[in-house]
Image (cartoon, rainbow, N blue to C red; front, top):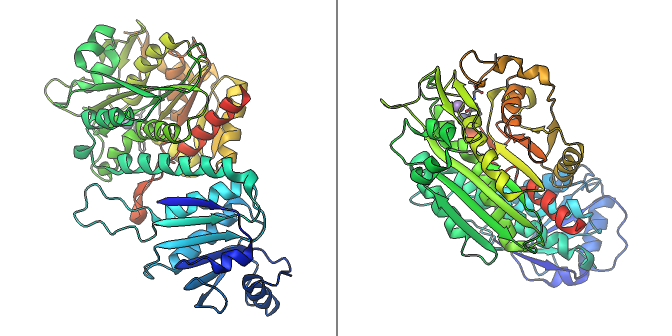
Length: 481
Ligand code: BES
Ligand code: MN
Ligand code: ZN
């Protein structure tokens, strides 16, 4: 999709030739003498345009307006949520009208987050998954003019939103792919393709290299599968080399059967989404390529399948992680932490300013927070407040969860330094406590996105979260420097 930023007034918007003109307004009195203001004023005066966000009026070939269809949509208070609702409603109203070029016109100056939300809403309302459809329905809308009267100051916000959309859509497409179209090797291929953009480099390690690094925990998860594992290392260099990077680690289990501790059959297909953390890291790099902020970022993706064959890891097996700590694998379905712990140890070599891991880690987090907020775990107060704020700005919310040491009690093992599971209670926290043992050497945060990375049911599909949160966090860092 092609977004263009315009700053002309309502009078010029009326002259803009497009298939659909969507005017985003509130109920304030309209006094302008241009055709759009007059139409709005008359609809509002007649009480025909309710002030509730999501309510709208559609007109065909309105006089004085060059566009074929006009949608007057109410955005209430103009919050990001209101704007999103207005745009989703308007776009579903014009579905099937073969609108190729649309113009979204803010009547009043929006705040920055609301403008960003407008672009995300268009993307969300028009995204179509393509990879494994023989005849994917084409995306009707090709060009989107976003008009903010006198809105020059919002150009950087617009650029950031365009980059976020590119990253979210990239993440969604990879996350939605079935496991046979998104193997560790194919995922590594996607990362390598990103290295074509200036500023991005990519190295991919295979089983031999990973073995010589001593990643015994990661290798144990992979050993029940015929697909070779991949350890993907991405670099985005936008700042001088002397500046410490932020490291993003994405869980890249391309399919999680549970292993010998096998999962029940119902909804097991959804475990193709167990690489949504990895997809979000790829998505962030896609966005960075677009936006080129002054910052250094490293992306690490430990990727493999969690399957079962005669060589598969067994409950009770003890493995040695790259950190040297031994781990008793009591449940082979708690595999995410086993691949992440070795990536955390690998991250030490970058002397990072912060490390954030992103993982569809626990069903317990879905129970705790549902699909609204991701679980945020970190002992670092500054990192917590920065990540929470980034989520608020980008409407990609998270919620701080506890890390009291008592939660680690269940991880004690009689046969190794640590077990990979505790009891059922507080499962999202014990998983985080396990990871924390491998994250002592840098400021660290863990995002459990099991509830937020995809939707189940009829709207089954990836959400692209938390690309907006992460990008917003990174851009704020770049600006602070
Ligand atoms: N990938 C799953 C977590 C998951 C489950 C995400 C359901 C979304 C929906 C993870 O690898 C897993 O299986 N975790 C186990 C941990 C348990 C064995 C301690 C879980 O949550 O059941
Ligand atoms: Mn699992
Ligand atoms: Zn998993």
